[in-house]
Length: 298
Image 1: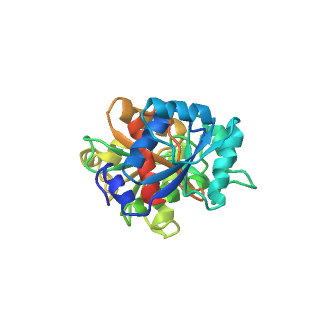
Image 2: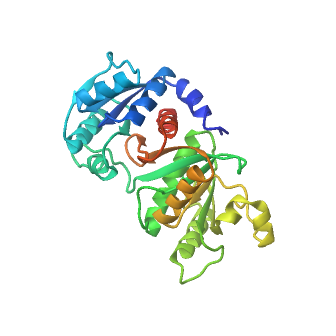
Image 3: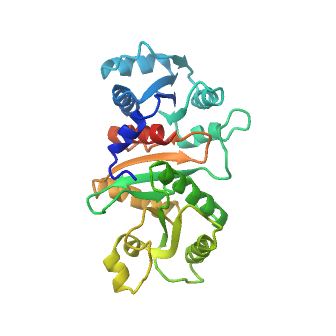
């Protein structure tokens, strides 16, 4: 298992260079991230969007895109459809969100004719590197599923586990987290957590080790777990934190970045290929990391 976000570039470089289709590519941070990724020789972009805007921004940031294909499309949904179709037609390996809303891009991803949906759920998987934790930490789902059902959480876990498998961790430790570490019938998330943990013990969910419910402090701190008399192979050594809903995951995601100065990368899983879908507020560095992550696991 890799231990640093920077190692994603080495993983990606060890594979063949990936073609990445970028929907509505006319965005400064997106093009800057693509420029850097191309300099590391890990991607070969196909730009979909308003050609004049893509060319103008590229010139301003010193990005020579003369050798790359630009598919001129002005409508954002049509650009998203065209980018997903490139992947279905085998002309691209990865998909990236440019200057288009998440809802519009995902509408194209789940389109029955040209879409990329594979499983029952597509979900967001983020990976963080922070000096406050001893290894990379995964968080899901901070962007896609607002109030996941029990069945949704099974798929969300499987998507996150798939990422960690591809990064070299054969049996990631999964904490199904919430506000408390005890089962409470009035808190549905704790009931979900206990059932998911039992399913894992009975080999109904495999490829990982699941425990829950765990509060976040128990999941990441052995000392906190010991104080609360929690005996668990997951507690204090978690790889993947599964939040009860999008609010919890999104708060944690942004707290780590904006208050904890964490380095991060994120992808959408559950589609035919990994999708680079970052927040508009995410830095160029996080967008670059996310391209590297998609190229490494795609």
